[in-house]
Length: 119
Image: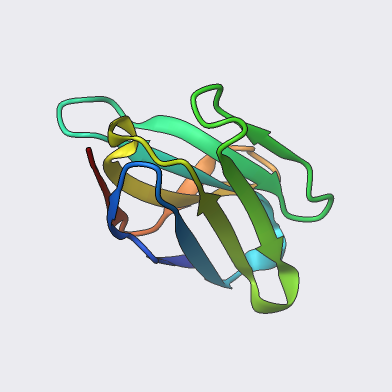
């Protein structure tokens, strides 16, 4: 079992910044990567960014490249998503998810944190 707890969401004006945190606990050694996803009202959940737990290799959705940065603190079992130059279209519930080392599936999810960007 892996538990994920997100924090850091809120309301911000366009052009502003927020930093999301995802604290992981439990069987974190079985994790291959941690990722961030988001879901806006009426839309499907979409991938935002991910980071390999050991190597630190990252990848991003095209829509956030150059604006968002994912990072990790292995000692704290925490992954961060620094979001800069926010746009109204970034408004969504952001979820942290854990990817299993063997199946490579995202099989554990946090409860989500709301990010609202006003124009």
